Amino acid sequence: MKNNNHSRVFTQVDYRQFRLHLAGITTNTVKGKGYETAIYDTKGDIQAILHAASIDTNGRCYPAEYFVRTSALSVPWEQAA
Image 1 (spheres, one colour):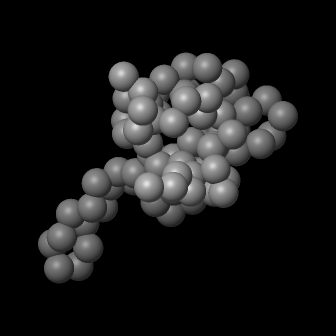
Image 2 (spheres, one colour; image 1 turned 120 degrees about the vertical axis):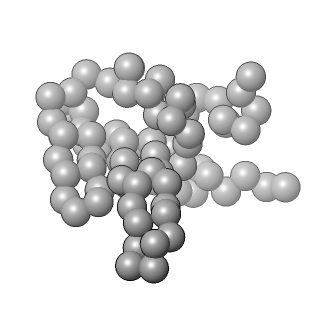
């Protein structure tokens, strides 16, 4: 199967991978709007995005979603140990 992640600006990752990515970013800017939070690097570029968990009007739960800038991924997460 062909990996199309490199054609995207952001790639969805799990919480552990998100935290590892954040540990390597020097930042002082975090901006939130609605259910989305963006984390910027010192140059002002968005490096990570968090979509908050939510519950819709029918009571369905949606988990939090984590995204990091695809260009920051040195190893495809599917192959990482």
